[in-house]
Length: 507
Ligand code: XMP
Image (tube, rainbow, N blue to C red; front, side, top):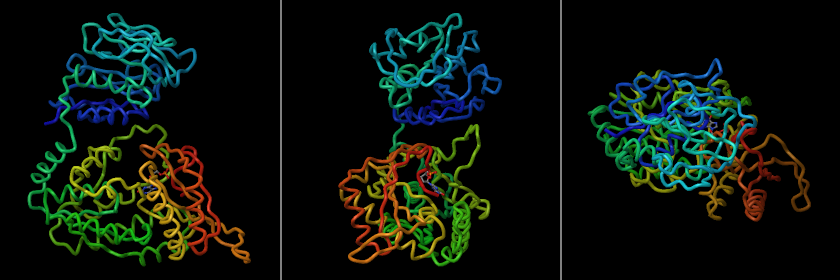
């Protein structure tokens, strides 16, 4: 059993980042809602309390009972987590005179404190808070300060309890990893034995035990998650795994054939289904983005279900669900911007049990597992691609002709990124077919044709994104090639919007 750090989630945007940073230290951790501490789990060795969008004195603030946790495990509070532990012990937390966002430097450091071991005076940290701790409870002492924040970090004397006002988990806190390492390894006694190889070994054993001789069916999308899940399951149960790859006709150019070829090379037993005619007919004339998504989601379930019923004795549905999809969200607004869950409803419809071997992994860990399993790099480092595919990149209604135009433009763009060595520095890229025609001139002819937008973004988790500053020479070459080679396109634009306020996909 792996040792485990528990991260109590009070709703901060950076809670998942704390989890990732701890995992990067080869230390296994789980994120649980602030009030769902696993009291009976013997593998827990330490607890981190996250930040929160609330103030501790808000009526609606998330509050948790620390009885049974405090004194039993070392505790580290981050931002709200630090304020909360100070507040419930009689400290004072007040709105800061000026809100503190951004870089700050630790000008005073108690070098004898184990949490700050090795951290130099002047170390940069990242602040993001509207409240500040103005007085500490009795028995608590300051262990670090910045020019503006006297209580930048504290410790409860004679107790394994620390709080930091800044965010060690964010990239700009240069000493953040060191502080988390000090907590997890030195203070909690973490053995740092969590790795892709150890995950594969233990998961393959668990899958063998869980599945025995049962048969499993799994839907492949060509993406990293479902592919890694399939290879892992294949390693555990071999021929008892059948994969189904549905071509809805809205994939990239030649993608179906290329990916089928890759899958066969990996020894997977894959049934490829060309269902594009069905999808084209159901999508004809549909312009609303959410309706397109619903039609494709339902169509996918129908095709998958029909194929799976041709197999006998299947008991399980394998899925490539990953950790960010599972972490119980403490979302405060609850607004759906786009419905991304393409195949929600599949397990219920098929009456199968769910097997999700990657459900505890972050995306970068899924990639590490794929590499460790010997999967080809081009499958592992592929850009994300939306389930409904080019359907949400053709604005307005969809026809086979439009799909073909977009496939050709997209192919020139993506191949260009690879040729110029830019593909891996871009998080996601693609072409979008716009519902406008504009005037151009080719030779002596006036043209009145379509416009294509190119989009390339950097991101870490798709929650926020920025457009990539691609070289002008590259954009010029791609634009020329698209206009010269793709019939029906006479104009190319580059999307320079960030997310928020724009989104990555146009629909
Ligand atoms: P947005 O457009 O919301 O996209 O900024 C964020 C990420 O999600 C992908 N995306 C989808 N993925 N089904 C999916 O599987 C969908 O319906 C869908 N819509 C957007 C998008 O490509 C980006 O990576």
